[in-house]
Image 1: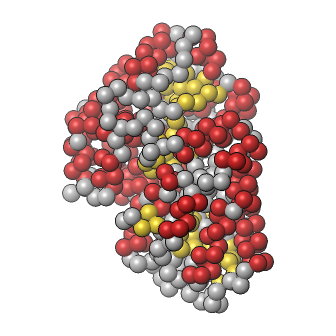
Image 2 (image 1 turned 135 degrees about the horizontal axis):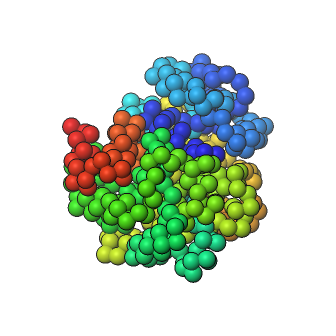
Image 3 (image 1 turned 90 degrees about the horizontal axis):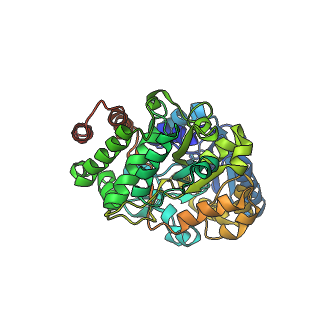
Length: 425
C-alpha cells in the first residue's frame, strides 16, 4: 500500500471519483432505465464491501444500482470525459475537497440531504461540502496523519514520544547523538508530499484551521500571514539541526525508504498517514505488531490552533450527479452507514467515520490502533484535508514543489512565501 493518497492527489483536481460499482462496463446513466443508477468506483480492496451493499440494495429496492469497477490508470480520463458529456454516472466515489468544486460550479452534482450528516463524524464531513452544501458523504475509512515511532529506539534511549514542540526539538539532539536519524522523511520529488505534512500541521498549530480555509476558498493573499513564514522558519531550523538527516532528498516512501528506516531503527520517527501501519504490516509484520508506536502530532507552545486538530485524508466520498434517478440514489446512500457495510470496512482494515463505527472496532485486526485513529478523528475540532487534494492539481502540485525547495535549502523561508504567493496571479 505504497500510498493510495499519492494516487488520490494526482486525481484530485480532475474531480476524480470512485463509487460503488460492480462488474461491467462504465455505462451511461442518461440512457439507463428510470430508477436505475450507474455507480462508478476505482478498483480497490473494498470493492467487495461495496458490491455486497449493491447486491443487498438491489434485492430489496424498487430501483437498481449497477456498480462499475474501473482500473486506476483509466479512471481519471474516463470520469472526466463522462462528466463533460451526457453520459455521466449517477454516483461516483471521490476524494472531496477541490476535486468537487468544478462539478458544483457546472451544476453537475445534486445537493444531498443534510439529515445524512448525523450518521457520520462531523470532522470527516467538511471535505464533502462545497459552499457549505453537502455534495459528498463518507464511504470509506479515515486516514489521519500522526507520528509513528520505533518503540525499541525510544526505550534504548530512555525517552518518551514528544507531546510538545520543545519535546520534539530536544529529541532531535538525543537521537542525533546516538547516530540515529530523528525523523525519516521522503524528499525525492515523487514522494515529497510527506514534507507537506509538516507544513500543514505547523500552520494549523500556529494559526488554527481558518488560515488554510481562507486559502482554499480563494484568498491566496493569506500566504502572507505571519504563521506561514514562522512555519517555514521552523522547518528550516529542523533541517539545519539534522532532524531529517542529510540524505532525505534521495529517500522515497515505503519499503526501502522511510518505512524501512523506521522499522530497522535507523530513524526514530516518521510523520505519516495512517496507511503507514498497513505498509509496515506488509513489509515488516513483526515490527508492525510489536515495535511500532504512534502518537498525535505535538502541541506548539504559543500557537493559536487547537492541539486536537488533525490533518490528512478525512475519508473518501460518494457524490450524486444530476443524471441519477434521485430517489434510488438517496435510498442507496443509506447503505453507507448500515451495520453490515461498516462491519465490512472494519474487516478490510478500514476505520470508518460513521457514528456507529466505534462499537465495531473491537473486531478490527488491531483494535487498539483502530480505536486510536477513530478517537483522534472523533475528538478533532477540525480535520483539515491534505492541502494538495484540497487545492487540486493546478495549485497543489507546484505548491509541493516549493515546499521541497524549502526543505532542500534551495529557498529561504522568505523566498518560499514569495514563491507560493506567485503561484496564483
